[in-house]
Length: 112
Image (tube, rainbow, N blue to C red):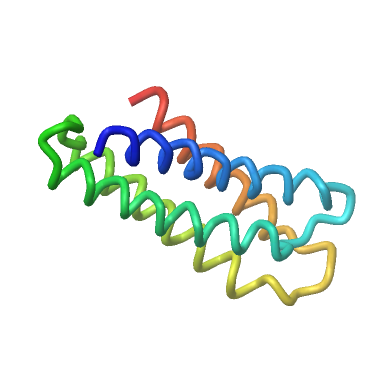
């Protein structure tokens, strides 16, 4: 179970990287692109899966539920903004908000 958990953690981190790279790709004329929307959705689903595995498994340490709750709210807001504004033409300032939420979420993961 620990190996599956470790692999999913790396895929989760890769999905956040996809979001940030998608943002950097269109930074001159910011817009929420398909990479950002799908990367956020994948990160949310993988995050929930990681919490479920950590909660159920004896091999993996139990998650910090307060941290998970805060990160979940931020992720839901980011996913909602990304999918609701994805079809807006550039420049779309919501792209900056989505990228900032991603950076905050990643910072919370490593600093809390």
